[in-house]
Length: 315
Image (tube, rainbow, N blue to C red; front, side):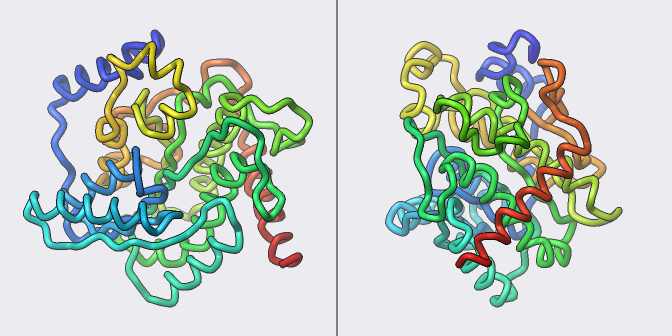
């Protein structure tokens, strides 16, 4: 199904696989899970099912009002499922290095336990935008944000039980490699889907490089593809695609299912350094040369370390 794309990425593939393998909800009681971009779409859907499965959910959102509304919905769903672990709302703008550092510092100081981070927050603006720190917005939110948040929270994660980092990438990454020489694509005309795919390839490369760097028995790093899932962000960014494929698109909870499953899986059940869709490892490359080399992944982490350090110096 994956190589024909449409059945595998749509709700058709999800439904068939769910029935074939008789998927069950994971047991997450006692696990502390952080989800970024949790005020809507895949992030909120993941938070709901994580809470329903017994996890203590930390919802990281940019907008307080939207975040509070989402937190109330997640709390209501958790109560319906009979769990009593209320989700916690945290405010952070994942496009800004300064906001990420402030949030991570406060979270670490609170000594709150943490077992899993789901890096879900992402954007695909219709026009080229820059953050107040001078970075292209798609690159800042989709690459710098998850990189820095993960790096800062690794000490706490390493204290957790079977700690995991899950990166919500996209099947769009199959169409793109990553340019280390032009990471923000400054030398290209802005094309929303192309810039988005470029950052989603970077996310897979980051997860793989982190896993190679991590000592045995440490944090497990996975990347994943939610399939073609309808979310407010996707509908706004790709109205034509939504209009044509609407009847076969997955809903947000179907798209978030693999992230929730990965949050409860062991390192044996879901090894790190792999790219998952519908609870199974999938190929990382369809166009030869787009996946990049091991050295490219290592260079990407070095590049991001330099970028985030430069903000510290200038700030």
